Image (cartoon, one colour):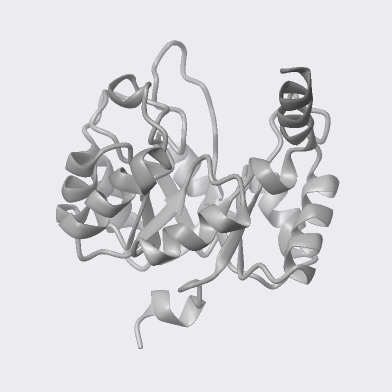
Length: 230
């Protein structure tokens, strides 16, 4: 059994417990309580942003953590675990899996994705890496680079996919990604209902990551308000 299998994410729900600085729930304490609630609800993993949040979450739950650091570097579009600085922080926080932007866009430090992954593998050869991608071509490239997991996190959030949603045409892009790679594919992004999550598993996803629909009450409220106002 490999290290990924031992972590035990297959077929389950990972809850993304994140709140950015401008959001009402921004606090390591609150994110840790969110993680506890997610565990009690049956989640098998947590995705979290920043080392400080991850360290606090790990004090309260024993679930595996997919760690990221969102940090802006000027106008560069790559901000999810963009440089080795963020990798070092997540390793120090003991995240079981580290996710990073694996699109083909220029990175803030000028390195190519290939160079960045090679640097990570040299420094942390046992670290499990997840590729946050937006297209099938990026997924194929991530598999060539040896990522342990591929996630649809950035579908709809890049210049090339701005008009795309993961759920469009019965999750057509997710099915296309799954059909082109052998690496486990994580479904993430705009999964708003339990039924949508189940559909992702039927489409071949290894596991599901849900964030805003569970842990961002302001977004949930906005959807209710929009619907009743319409």
